[in-house]
Image 1 (spheres, rainbow, N blue to C red):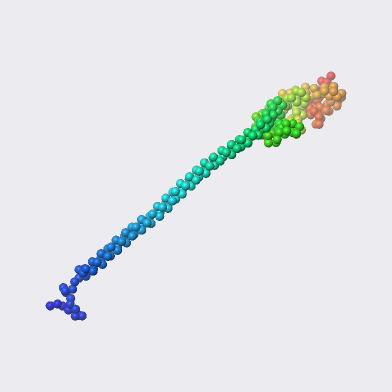
Image 2 (cartoon, rainbow, N blue to C red):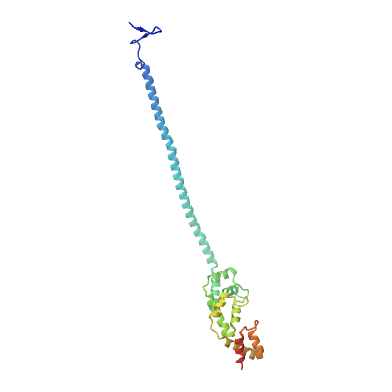
Amino acid sequence: MAKKDNAGKNTGGSQKKIWKKWWFWVIVVLIIAGIGSQGGDSETGQVTETKPEETVVETTQESVTEKEEETTREETLGESEAEPENKTQAETEEGISGEYRAALNSANGYSEIMHMSKAGIYDQLISEYGDKFTEEAARYAVDNMVADWNANALASANVYSETMHMSKAAIYDQLISEYGDKFTKEEAQYAVDNMVADWNANALASAKNYQELMNMSPAAIHDQLTSEYGDKFTQSEADYAIANLE
């Protein structure tokens, strides 16, 4: 006989357990299907999230490559643009090279034949009473000529000594004078320190000229030889000259 519970309902074997009912397994299947679907979506989501990252990396690499290509292109363009500028400059120089070459040739002549200073040559090239070159052509000439200015100063000093019988001090002043040779002080000092001259003989030659051409007295000649505004010989050189006058 079946047992009854407190509500009067039957308990025992006549009631089916829940997992034996058909709708229970339908629910289980649906739950499993739902979990599987979520898992698939999750995996798909992971893939989807990975793709933008890969795209960003690829875009960055492409940007770096493009920048490198642009830099290389700019450098190449810079080199190609520099060539026409240099070519234009060369063509410009060729266009005025006739005047420049003439100025340079004249400058070399003044240096080699007349032993002039750099400043003296420049002034001669642009002088209204000289070569009348433009300042640009004259500057090109003196900046591009090959000259030994010390040697030029020494050669000029020797000329002053041999032909004009000048004193050492007078030669130095003449070499650096704004109205004379316009050598630098260093070049003039090199000249007077390295020249070979007999200063006593120069003083005597000058004294004879004053006596014969200007009929000066020995005392006046002595003063002229030693004067700061005259020949600038030393006292001993002037004494030698006066003692050896005829």
